[in-house]
Amino acid sequence: MEKVGLIIQGPLTSFGKSGASAARKLNLSADGKEEDGLVRYDCRPNIQRIIDDFGSLFSAVVVSTWDNELKPGDGWKDVTIVSMPDPGGAMDTSPRAYKAHNRNRQFIGIQNGVEWLEKNSDPSYVVFMRTDQYLNLRELLDSFGRHMRRNIPGMICVPFMRPGIFLPSDFYFASELKTMKKFLDAQFSYDRYEFIVDVHRDMVLKYAHSLFRDTLRVPDWAYFPRDPSSGISKQTRTIFARMLGTVFVPLSLRTLQSVEWRGSALSQDYMKSVATEEDLPVDVSKNRGVTGISIPALFSIDWKRYYGFCEIANHAAPSWKENCSIMFGEIGWNVWIMLQGGMRTIKRIRTRIFKGI
Image (cartoon, rainbow, N blue to C red; front, top):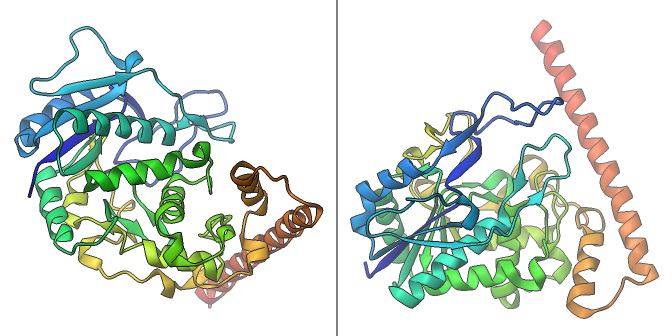
């Protein structure tokens, strides 16, 4: 393989879940104390371990972080630190959320690393990983090389997918450098307007809208689903069916199994229902359960978010008809969610009855 640059991006002191608690839903307690399972992790020894074990595989290694993370003496041999002011994260709406979500920090940090690599090393390919994770980068490059021989335009390699809920992981990426630049441009488009709040699906939808909408041929509103795990329109399903497993392609299971996150391996519960390289081809158009049901676009599309996008893109405020779509869409979606809740309750009751017989 031609020259590959490595970007290790993130804070040098990281706070959040660990591999052992990755599958758990964790928040701060009501009194503001940290809940068991959240850890504060010094990434510096982890970065040194990555460099010692795998640094020789790359033409250049960049640690991309923020000015307020650096301490006197920070640095690693044959590694360039790229640092800028912290752009900040966006706080979750939940009052019990334990930290801001970091999509801006992540993509800006990757972009800073890409810019340095392009100016100073000019690799053909780039690998991105987090400062707070360790993984077998030799195995990653082997898997990435197999995918690259398929010659798929615009391909982004990701750790894994959860095809049942249309969700790819963003722990680490591998791609051609020019592809990564296009991917990042898509994430920053429209003043970083989010097509959906969830970053994992948002990065797919924005990349699809930026590079593939001429071939997908679905209406622009199809890129603005409410919650694909609870229901999806056939037009939005077309987007995910095209993008997942073909453009966003999972790397090997062995790579994923090597991940240590903030000091511990990923739990077995977290690894359930994931699709990796060994599971290809993946066809999300044949999902079962709730995500296999096509919901009318009037209900499954977030019309308020879509018309907000139109206002940015076309400088046109919603008309009275469009405001009606927003209102009826929200009512219909809420009814659908209530029906789902009712069906789950009935299923639980039936299960208990049959267990008691």
